[in-house]
Length: 614
Ligand code: F6R
Image 1: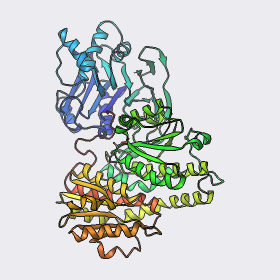
Image 2 (image 1 turned 90 degrees about the horizontal axis):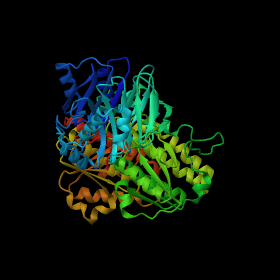
Image 3 (image 1 turned 120 degrees about the vertical axis):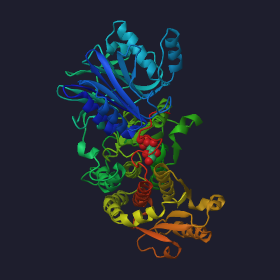
Image 4 (image 1 turned 180 degrees about the horizontal axis):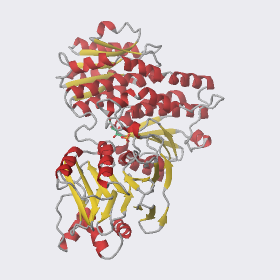
C-alpha cells in the first residue's frame, strides 16, 4: 500500500528512484511522483495514474541531475487520486519534500493549527501537513534528522515518511511507525524502500528497523535513532533472492509467472523440514515443544486469500492433532473480545507480513498473553518480527497483486504446522507423519501436471468472456478453494463471483442458478466418506436447474462425467492436500479471463498488494 523509495549516492537519483518505483508499483498505482535535491532546492514532478504518466512527464520536462532523491507510488487514502494529491508534498517554501505511506490520524488538528498561522495546503492529503511541519523545524535550525524526530513525536497513526531538505543535499531521512520501511546498504550509496524490491538491482544487503525509529542515509552510512533521539541499531540481513526473481521472465504478467513458479515454490517451502532421522523440524519456530504441548486452542487470523489458507489449515490441524481451531478475519478479531489464554496459539497468516488488520490482531493477542506464530513470506517484515515464532513460506517475492504462489506456500506451511503439532503432542505416529510428508513431497510434480493442462483452462476462460456471474462450489477442504477461486475472479475480471459450500446451496443460493450460469465445482477425491457422493448430488441439483457445470475432478473419477459440461482433471491426491492442486486451474482461469477482457492483471483496479491501513 503505497511504494516508497529514497536514494543517496553517486548515480542519477532520478533513474534509481524511478526504477525502484517500477518495482514497487504493485503496492499502489493511483499516482506517482519524485523529488530530487538540486542546487540548494527541491525539484519535483508528480502525476495521477500509473508510473508511466510520471515517466512521460519527466521525459517532456526533465528534472535537473541529482544524486539525492525520493519517490512514491500511491494507493489513495486521503483525497482522490489526482495530480494535486499525488506525493511528494512540499513545505510552504518548497524547501522540504515528503513522501508518505499510511494514515496520520490527527492530521485535521495539525492542519488546523498550520492554517491558523497562515499556511495554505494545496492538497486534501494528510501527508502535506508533515511537509509543512518538517520545513518549520529545519527553518528553526534543526537538521532534517532532528526535525523528523520532533515531527514524528507529534503524529498519531501509522506512517512511513521519507524526506529531503533542499538545503541539505546529502541526506535522506525516513521514519516508521506501523508501516513498512527497509534500508538497502550499498558501497558509497544507500537506499530506502517499502520493501527490498525497490533496490534489489543494486544491493542484496538490507537493514530492518523497529517501530518508532528514524533513519538517516548518506553516501557514507546509515544512522538509526528513536523518535526521542536516542541512538538505536537496525538489524542487517542478506536478501536471499535477486533481480531475476523480480522480473517477468517472458510472461505477460507477474501473476502468470508466479502461477507457473508454484511447483518450485512449493518444493522450496518443503526444503529442509525433516531431520536425517525423519523428524519434522521448523527452523524459526522459536516456540518450544513444551510451549506447543500446552496449546489447547488455536485461532487463525488472516485476510483475503491468506484467510482461505487458514480455513484449509483448520481441517488439517483438527484432523491430525484434535486441537480445536477457529479461523477469524483479522479485521474482525479484536472487536469481538476473543477468548484468549496463555495456552491459546494464535496463528497469523500473511504473505506480506505488513497487513495492518493482521498486525493489530496479533498485538491484541499478545497483550492478552496468547502466543503468536506467524506464517509469512517476507523476511524482515513486521508481523513475524512481532510474533513469538515464524514459519517462512519461501515462495520468493510475490509481485502480482493477486496472491498465487503465496497462497500455495501458505497451505504448505499450514500442513507443516499441523504435522509438527501432531509430532509434538503425539497425536499421530511418526510413520503417519512421514507418509503425509512423502505425499507433500510429490505435490510439486502434481502441480506441474495441472499446469501442463493450461490450454484447456485458457480456452474455457476465453469462452466465458461475456459471463456476468460465475459460481464456485466446494465441500470440506474444497470449500475454501471455491471461495479463493471466486475471489480471484472478482479481483481480476471484475465480475460477480461467489463461492459456496456445496451443501449450503439448497438453503438459498440455489435461487441464483439460471440457464447457462457457469458453476465451477471442486469435486473431492473418492474416498471412504460421503463427501464425494454428496458433492455429486449438489452438482446434479444445479445442472437440473440449467447451470453449466465445469467440474474439477480427480483422474479416473468417471462417476462425474455424465454431470460435467466440462471436465478438468486433477491428479489423485488425499482430500486434505487437494487444495494444492485444485486451486491452480482457478488461478489460470481468472488470469486468462481477465487478460481476455483487457484488464491489467498485475494491477487490478482499486487494489494494492500490501494493505497497511486498517
Ligand atoms: C488476494 C490477495 C489479498 C491478500 C490479503 C492479505 O489475491 O492477495 O486478499 O491475500 O490482502 O494479504 P497478506 O497475506 O499480505 O496479509
